[in-house]
Length: 264
Image 1 (cartoon, rainbow, N blue to C red):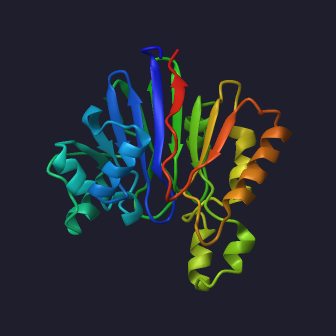
Image 2: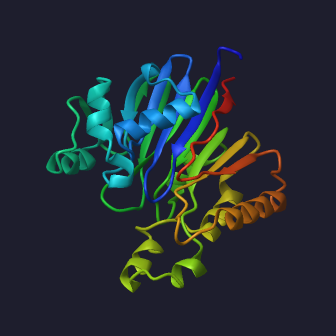
């Protein structure tokens, strides 16, 4: 494998836990820590990800399905945690703040593991952020929780070599679920989550000539269906004539393969 290859693995994604492992020739990053230390290490082993390569951890927001393992994992491996100032406040209040923290405001840029990283605010609870990762000429977009995407956010996610974006719920399944009405309303509000049809429509704006990998994340176990989402996405890519863009519906319980992203 060429030394300029990047690797991206989803250790798990869904309402019960989220974590991603992004690796360059210069090191690796753990994006979200929504599992226990033991579970994170188990999933890394299954995915062929070496925790010793980690240079730091990034956190999108303080919800437990993204942050529950942050303190213990980061302290075990002596990793700095990069998180928004509001997220740091909530982690400290909940006793989940690692020893080493790098707080930032949404929009901040920094370098880590060879990546030039740009953070940006997303429309979700608390102070949720997404990330744009650049390594040489390669671009990776990451947005797992957002009720809608602003035009400025779309700029960060457009025409990426690899795009991680949520497709949380099927609207009919959500409305027919046993969840409280106020919770249903929150989920499909602008501060909730993107549904399947929302994400499918966004693909027409976000995918470009360089798009080679699309990962659909944060799929609800109760209010979505992996096969239904895969069928919808395949149809949308065909409609857009983007069949060259590989897509994968990420699972909650099963880590993904290590996806290869050439770094030009």
